Length: 345
Image 1 (cartoon, rainbow, N blue to C red):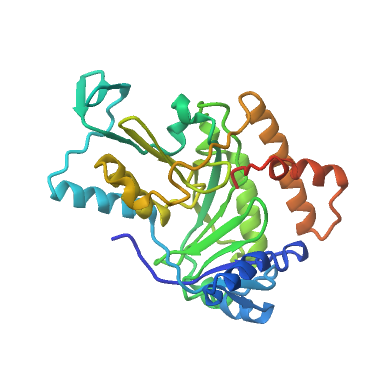
Image 2: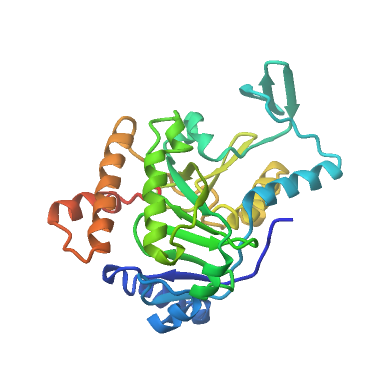
């Protein structure tokens, strides 16, 4: 149902400035005794998997997989309905109240009471004041080609491997069972507070930039069309790891940082255990009730984050062209890291 495919993931340098970007992680894997979790590839090995004029060396993670997230979600929905779970969609929640013995969720048409409740709303967590300081939201966009099986044969990308580059605002790409290339870029706009404007979902300028990058990676596409393009908000925690917190009988998880398909399995187990009062199993996990690290309040979060992201884009652009990054760009791009926070990428 979900197009599950066990295939490697490969991080690839696409400019000299990205060479060896994986070395720190590989050193840590060696220290932990799991050196075989990543395999370093030279440029010839990368090109044997997928030929691109911009691909250099890389690092391969052999234990990985791809799925189609929407198909996964619809499959899970069907499985829940078959088990008798009631799903209410398109129902606006107007309030969530806590009282002795449980939680009341209010809607325009009624209310539901339970001993506990789980809040799993991704980027919309910004609407919940107790948690809002611990995430930032930006958009990521994907362009999808028409079926191009002959191009995939030409470039040798027939194994379905999941690829990404090593930019700060990275490109990520995969193929589909019907021979398309899905190509994404995390360079969309930041949200201001809890307001998600339409450009977080589809920004024509970001789509244009993303398609240009796709064609730079694969000039072999020639006149092949981009048949679809879309975007959406992603929620990022200051440490770029998911966070799980409890507020009385209300349990929440957010901050998957664009990598939610895999960790959401663990996240579901954590939230289910918390809701059932059995969270002790995960008590030592760093994702559960970590020390609070906050983004600056608005409007500083949006203004400062947008400025830093523009500097990151400029740094990536200069590096792609093999040009020197000027000191001002380098300094502004490095501000989030200096402050101990991560921006959406």
